[in-house]
Image 1 (spheres, rainbow, N blue to C red):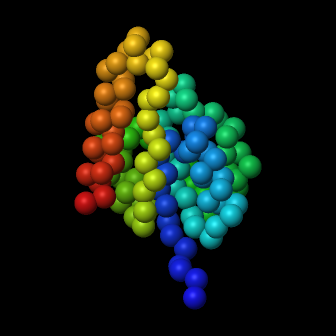
Image 2: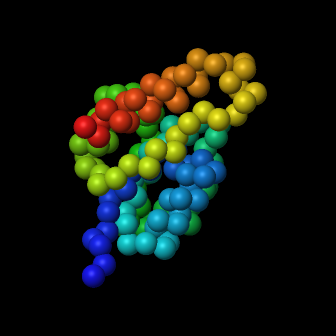
Image 3: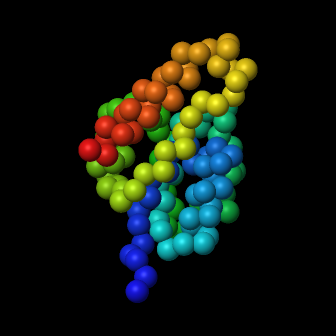
Length: 117
């Protein structure tokens, strides 16, 4: 017996790795995906174009550090699972602006985890 499809919330789903995961989930599984991305320098607008019209796919332009916004996203979509792939990862940028890394990678992750409980 096959397991029921899940509703999976993916953070950072417009980035290089996140968009590959989102495309795989939509193209190769029966799961639905809510893609949450802030659309920073690491995101690519067209990265999910091939699956944008799928009834299993939704995009939320949101910042994981905005607890009110993330609370709304969780309330609206009620995901079964979360794949947290949003992160600041460019080393050169971390030297020039370390505060953004702390905000996204620590506070954003904390907010994401807090919404699941």
